[in-house]
Each structure stands twice: as C-alpha cells, then as structure tokens.
Image 1 (tube, rainbow, N blue to C red):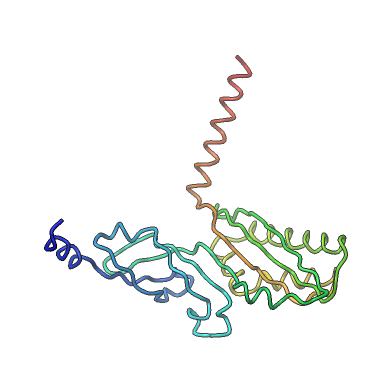
Image 2: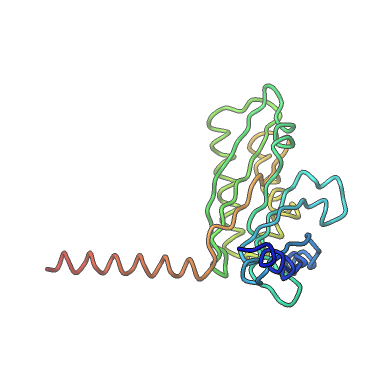
Amino acid sequence: MSERSVSKRKQQKRWYTVLAPEQFDREELGETTADEPEKVLGRTIETTLGELNKDASENNTKLTFKINEVASDSAYTEFVKHELTRDYLRSLVRRGSSKVEAFITVLTTDDYRVQIQPVAVTTKKADASQEKAIRRTMIDLVEETAKDHTFEELVDSVVEGRLSSAIYGEAKEIYPLRRVEIQKTTLEARPEEVAAEEETAVDVDEEDIDVEDA
C-alpha cells in the first residue's frame, strides 16, 4: 500500500461520540474513531459511576458498556458489567471478620440472563451455619428481585444500592454485618441468545428421544 493510500484512509476516519444507555441519561462516555461505522460495533468502554454522576465518592464502582448501535456521529451502548474496585473491596474486610460471597445466575422478566455476585462482611467471625444462612438469604433475595424486574430495573437496583440494602436488612438478623455490596454484575446473555440456547437444548432432547425410540 502506497503512502498516498495510507494517508487517504486516515483522512476517511470519523469520530463517534459514545453515549451511555438511556437509563444512564445518555451521558457522554468518550469518543472512538473508525473508517466504517460497522467497525465501531462491539467496542467496549469503561467508566466509573462517579464520572457519570459527577460524584468522586462513587469512583469505586466501575461500569462497562458495549457499543451496539451507530447513527450519524453517535455510538449508542448497552450495559454489560458493573464491578467494584479491588481496593474498595479489600477495605471492607477487617481482621476477625467473615466475608460471605455468592455467585447467582438469574433470568429477568424480559429474558436477560445475568450473573450477580453479592458479598457480605460481618463485624466479627461468623460460624459455618451463620455464613450458610447469610448466603442463602443473598441468593433468595437476588432471585426474587430478578423474577419481578426487567433487566434495566435490575441493573438500576444494583447500581443505586437498593438490592444490597435489601440483603443487608434481612441478613443482619442472622449475624451483625458491617457491609453488604454487589461486587459484580455481568450480562451473560441477551433474550435472543437465551432463546437460541433453549431452542438448541430442545433440539438435542428431541434427537435423544428419537434414538431411544429407535
């Protein structure tokens, strides 16, 4: 490729303003460049809740968005991950306390599959049965919340702290807690992907039945 061709290609590149989803008020996340709009699709951008809300106290919450639509000079995104910083999580744990975690995969009312990872930190060392009861409470509340909410509503309850507050309110009756947080939330599959997986599973089952009948 000649120098002239390279220079021409660079001149053809355009800048796209990356915007957060509507539930985050379409806040500007930054800019990205590409010579074709299709090349922007699928790119991810990470920011903090503090940057979105103009509140430095929320910089311990990281948010990841993926570009899923391009129109004119704007690139629109969808939420794909929420995660607390490691430094913040480490600051919650004190010597002589217990850290109780759970990894819960749920399906929202609009068929998004999401993994949610709550963590509870006790004021003192809890025994195994108390930790098990706290974990059970976390699982039950996350599953109940997902069962009654859309994906957007579930993400809002995580980011705004309502889900962690609900867990704290119930789990503190089991053993005194210092803090409850949702340390990570990950979009695992969109509705169309969930539907495709279910269709594939049904096809496999039908094939198994045919073999058995034969």
